[in-house]
Length: 319
View 1 (cartoon, rainbow, N blue to C red):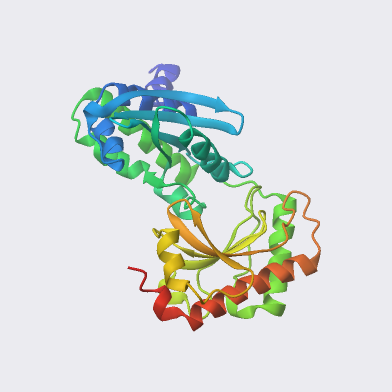
View 2: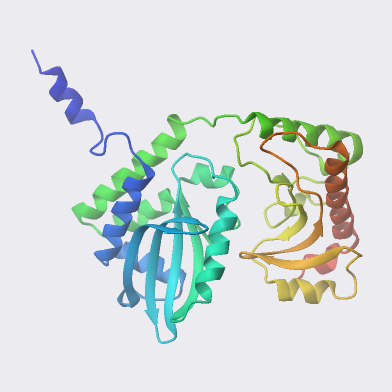
């Protein structure tokens, strides 16, 4: 009769219950081996494998922790990638924004040429989360393809662990609803139905903590641009944004020069640019919010929708 314990051992993953920090360590090791993965990350910055200098895991700072910091050397100094690795867990409060904050701080350091942020996660995770604040988004599936080109057992081991992460995201994780966030989303939906129905907000499901951005990608008159141009009610931060993906603020500013309405301004948000209107911050932690504050934020979103409709031609030809 076969040894049941031995059978279980043989069938289990080599890392047991896969954790994000396991992937962090394996990525760090693979980068130091200077394989195709190193070339891939260097390529994001327009650099080659030989420019790689080092990588460090769990780099803590005052504004939070970077899962992995990757450095490449240029004549002008170091180019850094601050990497957030996710398998299934939701973002902590303001986590993407804190990555952007740390990147700005690093750019002011002597010897630093440039700093970018990047998130690595299963494709399903990237589709569901707010990853647009990061300068780069790379899926586990894409990394598996990169590693396959290395054709060595070490790279194959990492690829297998990334596939474990993909399966864990698909089969083994469910978000934990947060009462305050869920009540806030319900109030936003109610007020949207009553005051700004053209934003077309679908009924929300229970949401996890940290979910404080509401996307309006099917607002009336904007549906055809939903992948590139959309309205985001960044309610936890007190902003309503008309966001343009892969756009520089200077180009957007030139397109709307002389046309912005009172209270509107152009800002850079990572690799995107946005026309922004300030609004009251909503409290997604307690869920106790003044309906008037919600209405004011939604009306700002509706103003941005109307602005887009009025200036559609100039806003869809930014060059």
